[in-house]
Length: 566
Image 1 (cartoon, rainbow, N blue to C red):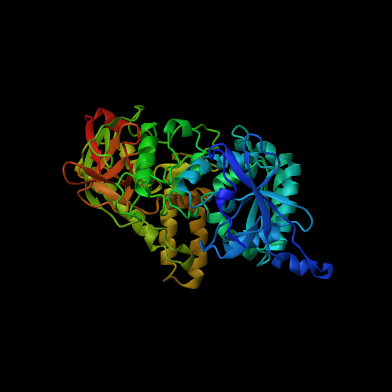
Image 2 (cartoon, helix red, strand yellow):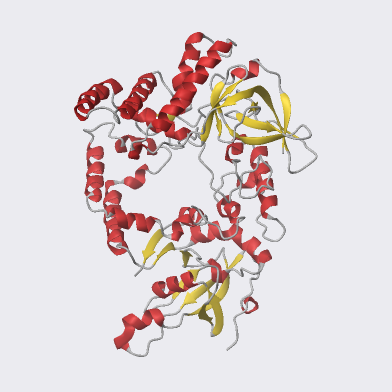
C-alpha cells in the first residue's frame, strides 16, 4: 500500500480552495464488540478539494497538535498517512459509528511541508472557521472528573442562556452586565436571578476538576483565539499560554482578527520571512499605523537578544501594562494617561531597519532606583515587602521635596505623590473599570500602611493584645478602600521606584538603573525608561509611571528631540 501524497489532491488555487476530509465510520465485524472496537479500528477517510466560496456543510476541528512526531497511521483513500498521537485520539472519539463526518483539519487539509501553500492557506483560516457549521473543540480524553464538569458546564450554560446572558455580550450592553455582576442594585430582579445561578453553580463545582481541566494543552494554544472567536457555533468535546509550534504563528494566528489588518499590510509568509524579520516588520507597521503603545510590550529579558530593544518578543511571557484599559468600560475608551498631550505619533526615518526613530522629550536622568517590587507572600504572613515598597517611595518623595525643583503645579499635588505612585495613580471601580485615582484612596493608603505595620507587629505581641489591636485596626482601615488599594498595588509588580536628578519620582521596569533616562515619546500615553547606547542610540527598557507628567505637562517644559532606538 503506497503513501498518500498531496499531488493526489491538488488545490486548484491555494488562495481560494481548501481540502475537506470525510471521516468514515469504523469497520467493525462483530456487533458485540462495537464499544471497544470503535476506538481501536483503523482510521479511514477520503479527501477532496473545494472552492471556499461554494463549500457546503462541514465541521472545523480545533485541537492541540501535542508532540510534533507524526507516528499514528491513518488511511486516506487507502493510502497511508501519518498524524500526531493527539489528532489520532481526537478522530477516534469524533468518528461517528454509522455516518460519515465531513471535517476540516489543518494537519491533514494543509500540506504542512509546502510553505508556499501554507502561506496561502493560513489567511483563509478565519473564513474557514467562520463558515463551518460548527467548530468542534477537542480538549482531550475524559479524566479527573471532566465528565461531571462538562455536565455542570452544560447545565449552567443553559440556565445562563435562559436568563439572557447573550443579549449582554455587546459593547453597548456589557457595562450593564458588569453592574449586575457587581450587585450595584441588589433589589434588581435580573441581578437577583443572575446571582442565584452563580450561587447554585458554585455549590456544585469541583475546584480540583476545574484546575485540571484548565491545564489541558488546548487552552495554551495561540490559534484557539481565532478558532474560537471566528466560529459561528463552538462545541466543547472532552472524552466521550498561548503556545505556538512556529513562533511566527504568534502573529499570523491573530492577524485575521485584527480590525486594522488591511492597514497593517502584513502578509503571511512562511517561506521568506524569518521570525526576527516578522517581529520587526509587524512592530514597525503597528506603530506607523499610530499605535506607539506597542512599545510597552517590548520587555526584558527577551528569549532572543538579537531582536532590537523596541520590538516585543512574542515568544516569551509579556506582562500586562500597568495602565491597561478595560475595553468594556462604560466611561469610554479614552486612555487614562496622555503624557505627550494630544499629538499623534511622529516616527522618523533611520538608515537601519533594526532602528526606530521617534520624536519626543527627554524628561530627566535617573539618580537612584529602589528595590524591585514583587507582590509579597502575604499568605505566609510576611508583609515586609509591602512595607519596604511603600517606605522606599515615601523616602524618595521626601528627597524630591528637598530638591525644591518646581516639577509640580503646587505643593498640595506634590504631597499626593506618596499615595499615587504605589498604585500608578489608578483605581478600580465597582464594575472593575480602571480610572484615575481619586482622593478617596488617601484613606486606602493610610489604612494599608497602618495595617501592614500592624501585621508585622503581631509577630511579637501577646495573643490577647492581638484581638484588641486587630479590632482597632479594622475600624481604622476604613473597609473596602484599603483592600482595593492593596490590590491595585499588585498592578505595579515587576517594576521598581526611582528618583530623578530634578526630583521626579515614579515606577520603571525592574531593569532600571541610575544613569538611565526618562523620556516621553510624541503619541505615547506613558513615559519610557531608556539607556544610552553607542552611536547616539538608546536601548528601550520599558514603560514607566512618572508622577507629575502623566497629562502632558512636560510638553511645555522641554523641547522636542529625536531618539534612535536600537
